[in-house]
Image (cartoon, rainbow, N blue to C red; front, side, top):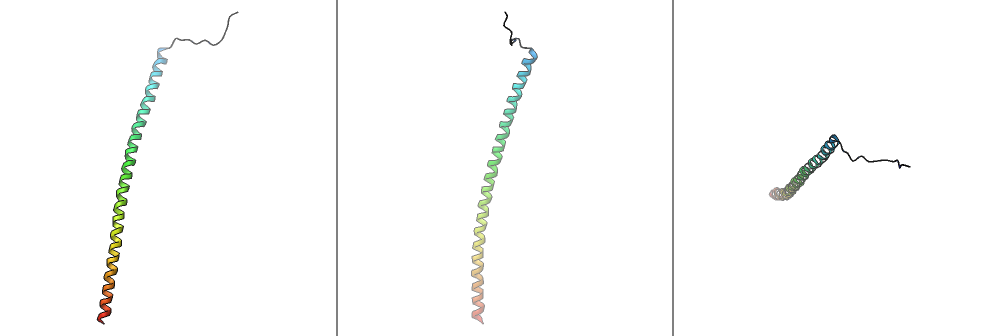
Length: 88
């Protein structure tokens, strides 16, 4: 009695081998390209965060100057109103 079942043919076609090599090279190439794009995205995000931080610092500086100018303007208005009231 012979045992029948699945048998694996160890003979590999050259075309199958070429296809496997090309598939592996496509996978590696895609992975390298994805890593390059992720590096670029990381650089862009870091630059955006730094620019946002600098913009926030400038905005805070302008807000401080605005508050200082408002106090000076109120002081000048108070001085002028006292001078006008005292002169009458």
